[in-house]
Length: 258
Image (tube, rainbow, N blue to C red; front, top):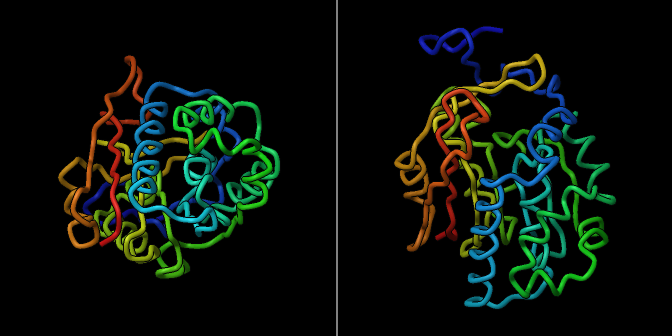
């Protein structure tokens, strides 16, 4: 595969990256088999954001949710569950699509710890059977977010560790934000998470690209899309072993579409 000129031999565009070689089970076991401190903080922030939004803007429980680049991560979908009649899990890698289609039917016990964090808010505790609820709501869709993502169809949306983790090219990082924002209806609440400082990552023996970003890059990307009140917070790297090369923490963007 050809690297992007001037970006180095490991730097690949989204189209060049070997997504169909992504080892879904290995990534799940490494990243989500147990709840770690930074994911706990991310999930708590998203939980409180969505609960506060719908306390101010009451809605039915039949909204259309969208998680872009779901991968092997179910907690963004779980965070939207109380308000959604349907949740589209949009994913490009075929291995992740297969993993998702199996997982949403009756998700494993490891996700119970994530749900427990959400249940600090009463609206989540009111969902008495989240497994059955997710199985009925979730629809796994394979597609490329740059070409296949429907516009203006979602009432609530998430995109976790995707925009900065699909290409080394900054233009594609920004393009991912553009397409995500365009997929949401005006007024829709959203939550995104980013790996700060990531310069790429390995899954098994395969290397995937990343775009090194910081807080100012997130704020700039949402300047034309977010209503007043956009929050971008930082969560420090726990322990001494960073998850990725260059990784300096997680950034969480919480807001709503203008």
